Image (cartoon, rainbow, N blue to C red; front, top):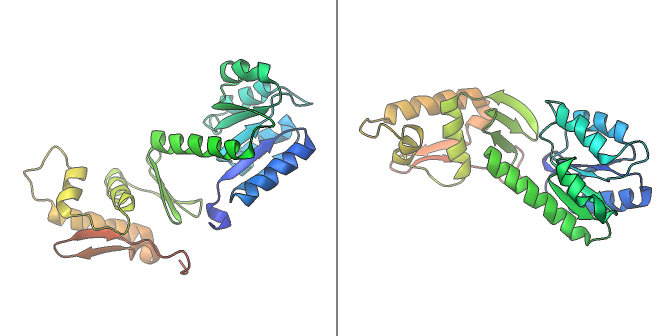
Length: 237
């Protein structure tokens, strides 16, 4: 089981307290971090502060409808890309969920709870592919921002070359990547030039930026190339 810091965060917005508690506990048992609120107005603050990886939203809330909640979420630049799954007992609202709420999925209440987790994982997997997000152990790298996260906390912004190199090494974690392959990845339009010295300098600068604790995870072996070594989860990072 992953550590709390690495768990995907799910926000449940539903005024059915029994359902909300059941769903929250089920998600926690399945290694998610879940919080639960019964009001749309409260949820808007929770989206900003909790920054959930996915939102499970009931369509009919006592204080507002789902389309009003979604409109506020989608109109805020900081939350507009938040993944939203409408989970409702009203099958007549499925079309509205997609058209007016701009939801990413619709699921009927009462369905097998495993289908909800499957929908969450499918959505998050698609988003990772769309945004070129790579996660390796305690690290997360995002192409959209070139930000490196550790245990969900942003560390720093990488330059374009640093990002492309580190992305390649993370993608091939615990496997050596030859300098020829790195060269093809970084400099695809100039394969007639020898880039060994440039790669060594780029790695050096990347290690300096990562700091001694993370930088030493990048290693080199003559004739094999470069490797990112992900520590065993049981070891102290």
